[in-house]
Length: 507
Image (cartoon, rainbow, N blue to C red; front, side, top):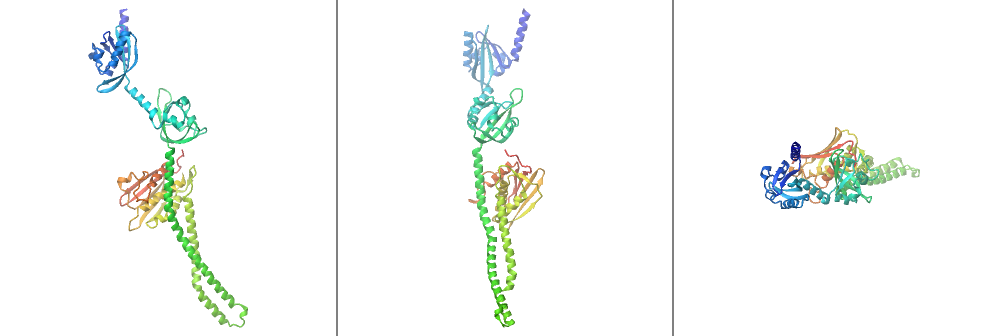
């Protein structure tokens, strides 16, 4: 029997030593008898210094715990899940205490739950006060929790959706993918989606998906999202405003470009009308000279009349100028027609889906439309390599090319000599690379990082809205490409666009 007690005592002490929770035994006077290593770590007191000391002396500031120990000793009833604020090493801590009576006194179980309660408080704050929507799913895509913002945006209460497949209620039936292929099942730093509310209405969101590991099996996920419908509407309005600004500048330039050929077409048409009258009068003289009713009028007199009429009409001048006037008129008509074709191509209205387009032709068209913006300040050279057609939104890229070309022209203003603009295209691997280089004033280094920010501009009041480069970057980003700038003050600037030939799948 003695050996059994010895073995049981050894087993108990081994269990105490291995237990993750702090365990301490106190006698009837609430003096510490012994404690395990976990108790030492939690309280910051070695077992040797605790032995023989009362709980009130060894645990200063833990009055509530001391009262609980006394109640257990006096009533013989355990106390469970008592939460205590304590100080250890100058740091505020949160303890959980469980007390149980023993034949000789009280057994105290102590756990440090500071991190757990902090995490729980953080989770509660996120679920209650976070402005972005947040929900979690298990490995099969079924909802395990949802915060208040997500509930408000989606129109569902958390209790209505727990255990249901998220894919079924945030996407319309027959949506972009099945539940297993849903983009929300895969980790992603940021992705565009369209969510559906309980009432059937839809809204645009920006999502972030992170894996969530809980126990064994397939990991779940944490999905955060925010409603970007208003922001996208504002972007569209800004894009529209920027297009209106560009249209205003282009309209004046196009009016001038069209007015020049129209003017000489009109002048030549009036000249041809006058020449027609002169030739008609000459023809009438010829007919009179050949008419039989002149009778015996001598041939010399007839030829004299004809010669006088030819001199009056200035036949040699008409013979030389009429063909030239016709050529100039046809050239003017063709110039107007080419401007109309370019404007029609430039203002091409994109469909929702991308389509393949010739970017070299888009650049030529943009240059034709913007010629009046450039021709007085710079000479433009095109170095266009042979390119495959690119899957893109052509109308949006036309706007990007226009912004870069106009910016290059603006960089030449105030110079005595004409500037130079070089536009080149190359195929580099899977990308088409477009470079727009000018030898203008350049961009100071301290503002170079700001030029793509919305509404940032160095132009004078009424000259620019600061939206052109911001929208250019947004358009290029939507195409899965990039736009970079290199510049040296006083030497010029190069904007480089990389656009994937095969485009980027629309969200």
